[in-house]
Image (cartoon, rainbow, N blue to C red; front, side, top):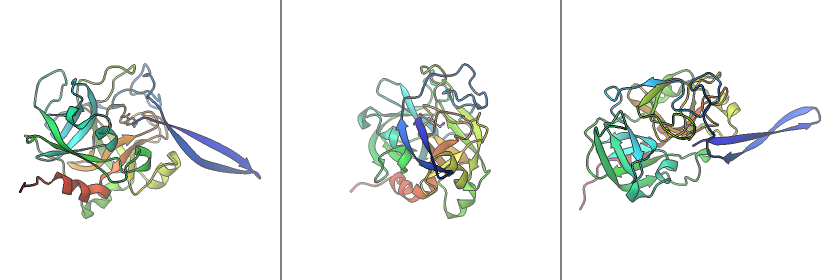
Length: 274
Ligand code: 4AZ
């Protein structure tokens, strides 16, 4: 979700006081002419990335509405379920959500299109900027593609500052209209909690993790929400929000999957009826 942050500055007794910013969600603006340019602040695609292959990332999937319009990304976490952002799961009625797996190029009929039988949203979720931006969709049928791994207690180091992670998506291309037809990926380093707290007043290190370069230029963008941030095949983040895309000192904010791994696991488990 693209979120515009306003910061108010208060000068008191010669001291500079940063007042807690209030967040005003806005519809992402129109794209700049130079997608991928460092610090351009454009609203275009996965910024600064490249075409990616499902052979390397078979768990990367996207969500469409009943009309076939891609509105978010998601990630296979078991043979019968995907994880995505809560704000994605809530954007379209359950009966209208389709999960498209095994289709690198949206213009083809490759892979599978599965409906959704159940939607689980993290308890207490209200807004991406308040955390808990994670959901699990149970599909009708089974995926023929391997799931991403969920992080366990031994994976805490993956969240260390500087870890190179890969973000994947079919996000918007330009001019607030068309989205990328192809799966794209970009490499982004994990940002420290203290740095991300400086960048975003709403940052919560328990429920979120940031990734990107201080100078900007590489980022997830509109339409990439719900998609995976992986290290190898381990899912460490889910694209959640940001102030625009690829701006300096405005890294992408991701749901911290380790915090929700047990919940996701419980929801992902294929359950026997009766
Ligand atoms: C979005 O609207 C979105 N730069 C996703 C990620 C980011 C911004 C917006 C992070 O889906």
